[in-house]
Length: 245
Image (cartoon, rainbow, N blue to C red; front, side, top):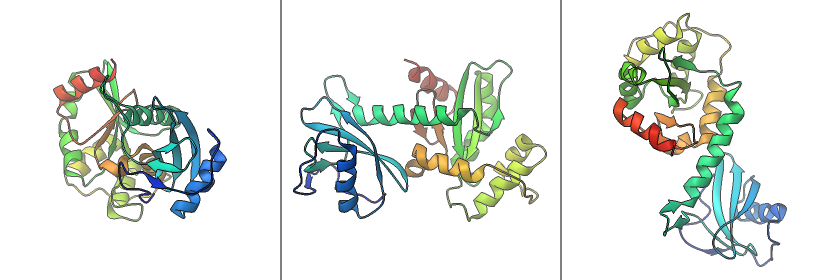
């Protein structure tokens, strides 16, 4: 979804007054301003008097905006509790992502690298051709040695009509997915194969989770928080532990 405002700036949207928590009216106003299809999913209260948190779904997943109660003004950016040092926008994003992943958990297909005694679990959105994705995979034994199980889902950064997408399909359709994943990430060519696969749905899940904003690898933790990029095993374990607090 294109930027609706500059970060931190208030802009007048319309002269109409919107009733508090009237999702339909917020949606109508935002559609008219943005000139695109979108849906207002939720209008939440915030600690600031007269400011609402508006959760919007569009072409590129969900976005969060803050609007005046009457709908006349809007800001895009962070809402931070300075006293408690909490980014309230990130808190909401994590909550939505946790719910999203839980909704897909039962049917989420993945390529798993689990230790014999798994203490922790992470989901990693990965791309075959991503350098730091390959670095993360090189350390798989180190993660497993710390009791961290890794579930891979694909997010071909170049899109659904790309060579990276085709490589993901080849890995998925291989007789031994784990071996094929390791070989592909080491730069080996995998035999082209076609089969029923979840790569498109995994890519779309990545869009909803916000992976397109930060790149790959993206690690999603059990609390819905995410970390873009590579973390070595000990740092990953520390990050997992902090997500449990």
